[in-house]
Length: 155
Image 1 (cartoon, one colour):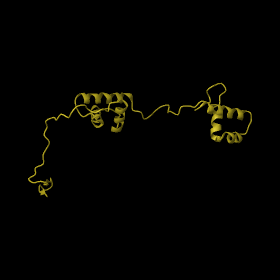
Image 2 (spheres, one colour):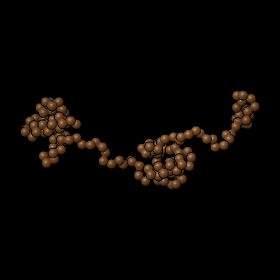
Image 3 (cartoon, one colour):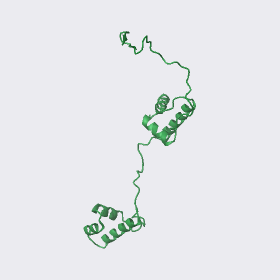
Image 4 (cartoon, rainbow, N blue to C red):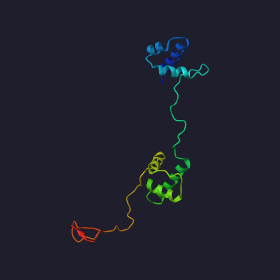
């Protein structure tokens, strides 16, 4: 916050220490009692920065994926990419299942890891067909559909 806020905090605590009523202090500053009591509680005459803001960042992140798992995801992604194989989150998860990695991250977590490490770029260049023919459904006329139940033709 600005210096004015730090000065306001110090002034409010000084007024309390002189014996002024908390209700009067809060009304004159336009602040709540909760705000005033928070700064009274934080007041420390030996610490010159007691009136500064404190970080609200969590001290630890209990659900953060372990660093080893993150390294495995990156290694698998690069291996699949360099082998010209599908290298999305699903393929990475399948590889991790085959390797027996525990804990196995979700696909969403794998996507977050890839984005955090800037590994989300697509392949460059044109698509090169592999030469594998796709299966073709037999049809004698246009709009003819075959079914696997009963073996008959539907129109």
